[in-house]
Image (cartoon, rainbow over the protein chains, first blue to last red):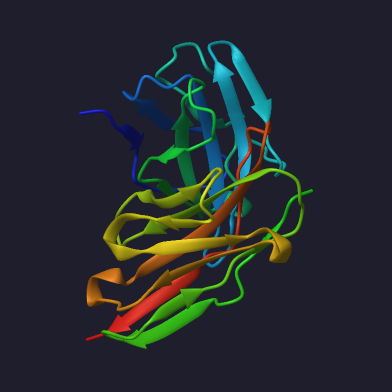
Length: 114
Length: 113
């Protein structure tokens, strides 16, 4: 079944640790996105990719980095986690073939940095 | 830059009540409009979308939304809500030709049985 997968769903980690949030999709989409969402706030785009080896920063500045080596995989990495990185991270994808930007979302990763 | 306002942060209704959630965006031009819903513990999923044509669009589960260009609005409606509609609802806008969605802050809807 076509879907978007994110792991882990929940992560509690100490300050200074390196973490990677995984996102994979079996939708066959070429575009992928990472959003950050704090409780009661809107989703903010932090990274996006139009295809393999393409990555761009979004509207919200983030200390995280991303890579797109395979079409279906779009991991997000924090080299040194801090309490200010505590948030929910949502991955999404969409297809270029569509004339509109309908995005499909994964279940999210809730990150807590102590 | 585009911005999206959802005026109702938390709405509490009884079952069978009618629902209208407001959504306004700031920047004109040709836009594509979306309502997403997030049920407790589930993915954010598309409820309905507007791209062109009839400004009254119908989505899943009896929801509909009306695009009023002159008011920069895309309000979500449902004539009779159910307990299962309890969820968080997000309005989103993308300007035609732009790849990026701009989301509102969301409205938490609680339906009392």
